[in-house]
Image 1 (spheres, rainbow, N blue to C red):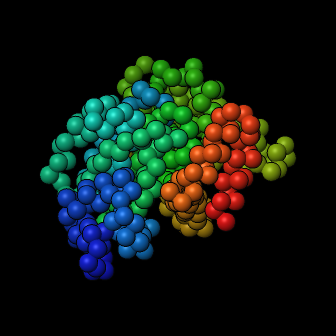
Image 2: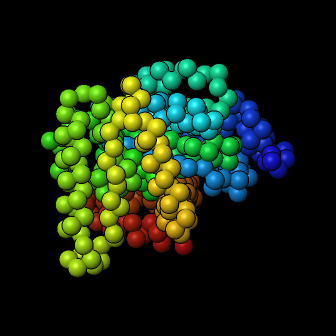
Image 3: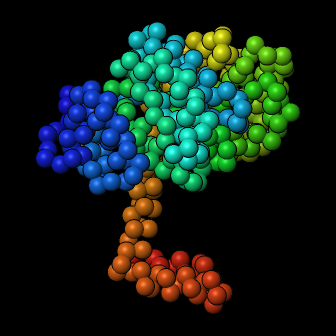
Length: 330
């Protein structure tokens, strides 16, 4: 089913993208990243058609082999006939490229496959390590028929927490040599994981790293029992798997586990919690953008700049300035 016809650029791009035009899809994603007016028009039309894809967040410390593992997961999915899209968040300049852009080159074997779409997105300094428009881009890919969408983060800062808020399932990728850093990871990465995978399983130390991870997760589970901490959410209890993106060892089992987690949630109560969090993140992001635009518009710019001058001179505290800025919007 195509998007409703309209004379607007956004509507035309939406209709062509849903019709299978990869050029239109690329242009639409560029419009979303650049926050062009056509993007909102297209998203309004496409959003009702989204919601059926399995969105997988792939995160973990740098050097874990996330991109190689994603490429291996893509291969398994394509063997099963599943359309796949990848959003690879690039921390570097979109002009000079960087590591993730290089990984995208390694995925060129799919260049002629119309059921594969790979997109590098610059994080542009967005807090959390994700591009600010990642959720919207994933929704567009979903609406355009990609039933499996991977979001690969930069693996730094709070990206692991943010990707969990917009993905249906989150896989944390760990390398064998990172075993000594597991305790430091626990507070951030492991608590958002639906599946933990020790990548590069063909290397020495992989089994040991998996055992350490299982022990850490078990300990965290015991410390967060309802008797000792009744207000804390129930731990996810993710499985720890071994895989190798390079040799494809364990990759079919990893994809099967991701699907199992996703399907079990759908059977229990639908993917309600994950999608509610995604909806909240999307609406909050749009609200923040529109608030910034309204505050720094020419109508209020003089007053806003005057408040910034007072804060810079320590004549006004930043909380009072924020309160006054909110008053300007009323």
